[in-house]
Structure formats: C-alpha cells, structure tokens
Amino acid sequence: MDSEDYLQLAGIQRYAFCPRQWGLVHLEGHWQENVLTYGGQKLHRNVNNPEFLESRGDVIVSRSVPVRSHRLRLYGIADMVEFIRDEANGIKLAHRAGRWRPLPVEYKYGQSKLTSCDRVQLCAQAMCLEETFDMDLHEGHIFYGRPRRREVVLLSDELRQETREVTEAMYGCQNTGVTPPPEYGKHCERCSLVEVCVPSLSQRQTVSQYLERML
Figure 1 (cartoon, rainbow, N blue to C red):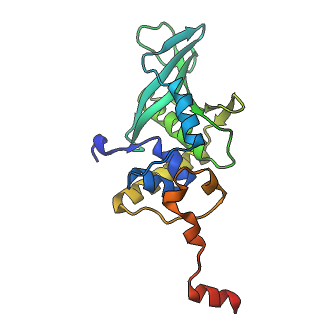
Figure 2 (figure 1 turned 90 degrees about the vertical axis):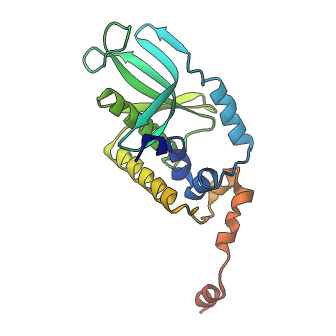
Figure 3 (figure 1 turned 45 degrees about the vertical axis):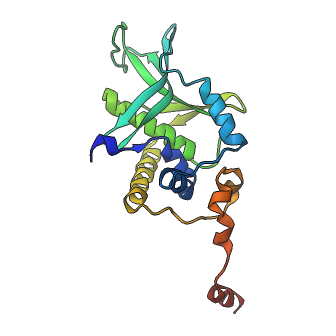
C-alpha cells in the first residue's frame, strides 16, 4: 500500500471510542460541533504551532510534530513531543549536543476516561516515534484540560496489541466502505453526531425478538 493511502492517526481515537463515529466522519464525511468538540479545538489552537521549539534546560519542547508509521500504516500530527536529555537511552538530534529521549504528550479537553481510546491514540503516536528513531519508548503523557494535569501512560504490551487491533479494524471498515451499525450507550450522550447517528434505533426490537423475549 502506498503511504499516501495511510489512514489518519487521529481517527484511531474515534474508532476506539465508537466505530460508528469513525465511519460517519471518515467514510461518510459527517461532522457536527458541540461544547466538547469546540473546547477541544480551542485547546489545540494553543498547542498547534509547528514552528514552536523551546529549550527548558534538559528538555526540548516541539509542538505539532508530523509522525508516520509504515507498520501501522498511519500518519498524523503529535500535539507535543518533549525531548528529554538522556545520554544512556537517547538519540542524536540535529544541531543539538548530547542525546535526547522523545516523550509524546497528547492534549485532551476533558478528563481521563474509563475506556482506553485516548491511550490508544497516544500509543500509536509513540509507536510512530519508535519507528522513526529506531528506539523503544516506555511511557507517554496525556494532558487533560479540565483537571489541568498530566496522566502518565505506560506503553505496555497489552496497550500496543490493542492499538494494532484497532488499526486493523479501521482498515477493515475502510476496505468494505461500510459504516458500523450504532450501539447505544452512555458514550452517545457526549457525541456531537448523535442526531446524525440516531443510536436509539439500535434499541428497537423486531417482532420476532419481542415474541422471543415475552415467551
């Protein structure tokens, strides 16, 4: 597959959150705003600056970093990558003395979720950086805007496997071109596409289902 046909890395969070939401956005081109999506865009406007580069002692901060993985077949933008001085485990950077270890930092408007959708997105970014720099990373951070603090995410084997599985599922949907059916849940209340999706239809029973339940 040509790298130009790779899927967007940002979509992995949507698919892990709700496969139907991913299909509505990436296959059908639907999009609606709500207070959560607006807040997320506002937060990212403060972060998205590909020309931003700052040194803070033993930390170099770079924003809006392009990333790509040929193994995952994903491409996208990492909100922020901090390069931390690490002479033992770091990599060389152009025009910088010493060695530096990348630390991906993803920005989210809300707060930490019970599901792993945010962590899967971060893990995909980390796996892109590992492939680019030919090194192993062990953690990444997610900055949540509401509590305004970071969550440390360990890049475990289980999280990496889940990331690979979600990526393959995305490509499965991409290849068929079929948007997954709705599955109504609490997450629907936070989705800006709830009126396009109409997930409540998934709760309606057929006559045979009704009779089977009653009997």
